[in-house]
Image 1 (cartoon, helix red, strand yellow):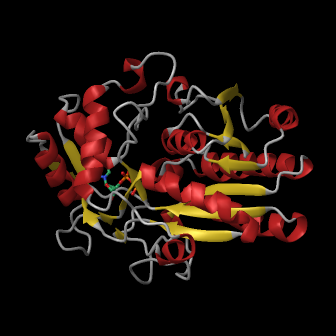
Image 2: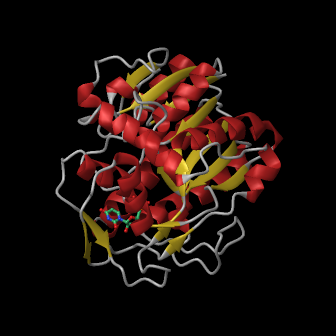
Image 3: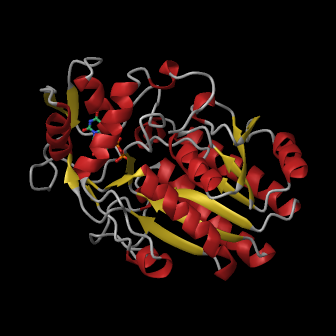
Length: 334
Ligand code: UDP
């Protein structure tokens, strides 16, 4: 298939591009490189440097490349930031998504994959969280993704656009020592803890230890980025049988303290930690039920153990302590 991947230079997008290219798909990456990295773009993919605010740029790339499907990763993604700057998320994520969808419909694109989020479930009424769990977004970021999910239902209803909404729990790990996570500023737990192991940070701050969990710290479901990528490829191939929505996680929760302990064990470094205040927008526990995608598409995580996820992340971070700044200009996936 010929595919357009927005945000294909980013952490999850680049992992998906790699699997698509390896499966023989032809990929055009649309990215403004504000958060992504040129070196993360697969050498066999075409990079179109453009902004989703620019409808003309989207029209041009769709007219030129005529993709059969779009995978949409490019987005503001930080829960904490969205609590401080709600318009950034509600505005940019929804407006850019609409630009992309309107252009997609105008150019006859019939397949669409949306990166959605576990943050749709702000205070989940039950754990694990399946697709029937009541949606009540935990932040403006989660709300922006829910609005896009709702819009997609109408795109299907009105224009026959087949979509998959994939709600990631905590994406983590690295596809290879050459392709991993590199955010600036870094806010995610595992890379922050590993930066402590590298001596780049003095300590990690635990955001609250008074939650109603076994050790008082927040519990999350960490899922390997290569397993997420596999889910995208499967969902894309299934779209001709209809639109679909899946929660994507390992189905097991680990507390912030357990993650830090695992990082200590994998790296052999002490990694000092101190307890700080809660971070606004953080639910106590988010653990997925991914039974639906397992049953319907035969998906199963290959990296079920937190230790495997941390080991792969450590292989990337220790090989590239400054991320893509340590890499050459062209991607060379191993
Ligand atoms: N967290 C933390 N200290 C940090 C970064 C994150 O205690 O420096 C916690 C955060 O409150 C959450 C969990 O680690 O409970 C995972 O956070 P992350 O930002 O990695 O992902 P999110 O759950 O926000 O998608």
